[in-house]
Image (tube, rainbow, N blue to C red; front, top):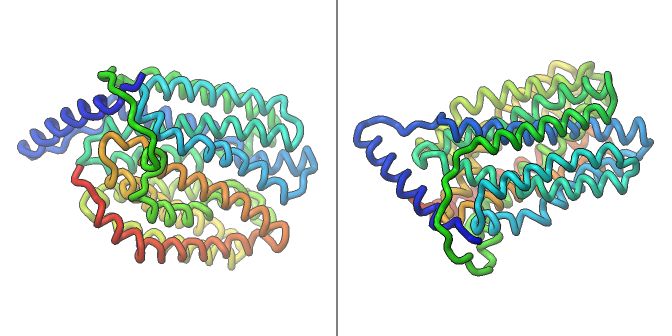
Length: 414
């Protein structure tokens, strides 16, 4: 039964009352309560478990299954196809049904799919497992993000989503370190087992979120804007372009390090995580203070420069300095982009806004994995990372020419 639009209305009334009284008293409404903390923990565990596999699947395919590097990108990007098959529907589903129940069920199914990696022994079966798990991950992330938006006071949305987004960036940055160590010491199947354990701990964390039951209402009618937030399409295009380089980094940077002779290339993710963490301490607050366009333009410009340097200079010092810079810039721009999507959506379309935001990112990451595999096969990884700078410049052009006018025209004061 649908139960969500009244759900949003009740939450909104409560939020507005809290924020109004806080504003009168000169006190900002609290952010770090039990629900927000559990939202952050569960999202971190989901992404940590999944990204444990990201840097090691290429190694497993090449070293154990003797797969060509061109096909590695196909395997990695197959989960994106699963995501994209579900994401357009997931926003509608999240806006219609109980968000917490949906979060629990989809998260549990996502965790169970790790068992598939233990029996998959060919490229085709690995692609199938990743495709199905990607679909459940799509539904899990949309419902989790939407619940988090609901529990964050709107006047602290940029800051809250900045810290929430930090969990995925930390997961994507830190998990490869443990992943490579586990893979080298114990093998791929042991790594998969611990990924499954971590994911089920995330399910437990979701169960601890106190999310109120809401009044049931009729489901919204099917229409294009129930699946894609049309008003945010310019933002989606810009976000796709900047996510393509991210997909290249998280999937192929260890192989790139080996190609250019950098020892302990997996330390890239430590420097990247430090950059992300430092950025998230200030970027969300700048967004809440109305600096959203300044923050985004700075991050996109700096990313373009960082990638051009990263692909041009093949020494360890530059490799790790660029890792820090890339993490810093992504840490700045991700909460800004999420607010660009959410701030043009009414309360009863937050699921659709979140779905569009995440779909854009996943589409870009999947394209990045495929493009990186293609370029590395025909040229080399250095050329792939030089192209990352071009994608960031294209994203910057789209942002200035299309995103800013569209956002200023459609922004809601909520």
